[in-house]
Amino acid sequence: MKVLLVEDEPDLGASIQRKLNQERYIVDWILDGDEAWTCLESHWTEYTLAIFDWLLPGISGLELCKRLRVRGNCLPVLMLTAKDSMKDKVAGLDAGADDYLVKPFGMAELLARLRALQRRSPHFQSPQLQVGNLILDYSNFTFACEYPNGDKRVISLTKKEFHLLEYFMKRPNTLVTRDQLLNHLYTFSAERVSNVVAAQIRLLRRKLSESGCDSLIETVPSMGYRFNPSNADSTVS
Image (tube, rainbow, N blue to C red; front, top):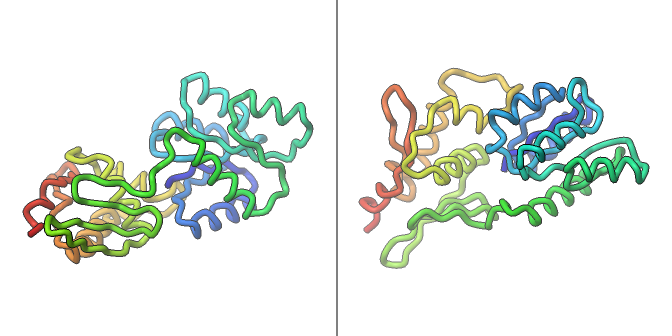
């Protein structure tokens, strides 16, 4: 799952990002509201959840919520703030925030509130993503290929491998560009290497070969990649 974190306090932002990474979230951490809105306008479909600080340089977290809701965007938002009066809480919720967490707070509570938002969200992911005979399991970060004879080959994936394969499986038979994959897998602040996507694809294909599915991801020369689930049929016996 991918989270947009908008928090201008460096220590707090770094702590939240580190904890969410440990819980296998992908986190884009942005320090000001203007950049956050630019990101949301072009990439909002990539996110499962958002965490906004109320007071931000540029556009406030409150205004970010309002803009999302005016556009009919139902991205679940957790608002972080030092404002703890009932009036402020009501203002945040009325602006479109789904939940409200007052600073200072513990990371355990933050994680619990994010899990609650996921459960309430209409876009909450099921424990498994299945495309044909291919199954991605969110509960244990595994991929499985089910064979007609009832056998199943299960392989464990790293966080990057899992999120890369998830992205492909949600877009079967669709051309995906290198830049789309780069934006999905890596935070905006992360150092990006020109061949990192190709390298990650190679690693994933090598892992998929353990289940006989190394040809699932096709290279489209000079354009990108395509996930073709029908290629699994020829490998299953």
